[in-house]
Image (cartoon, rainbow, N blue to C red; front, side, top):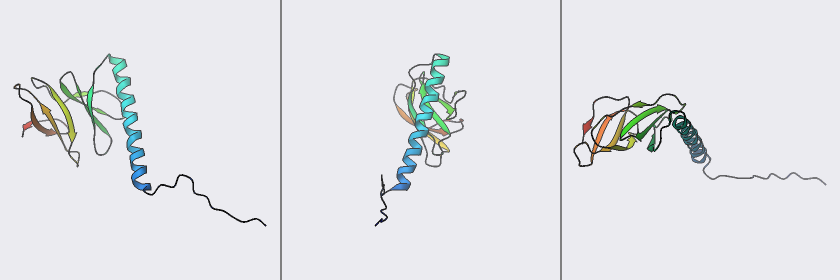
Length: 124
């Protein structure tokens, strides 16, 4: 006599969150690949502090004491800041419209905010 048996392999109790994390991880790895590819093509080194936008389409990173912006699909990176001192540790706002970061234009490290598309920088 033949009977049916249902076997579930790799059952995940949180499928939506796990899938979202897998997608986010994949996007991050693709971005890292493109950033490294960009670095080898232009001899850019020591990029730090990557920040991925909430929609996963934009990457902000620190390079040469400024913040730079590029698409996660690759392409040209554009400088967002040109302050004296070092700008670092960018973080997107939850809606992706603003970037908060730390910078030390006067020797003291302070927190600044600017539009994600670039523009006027405001010290908090």
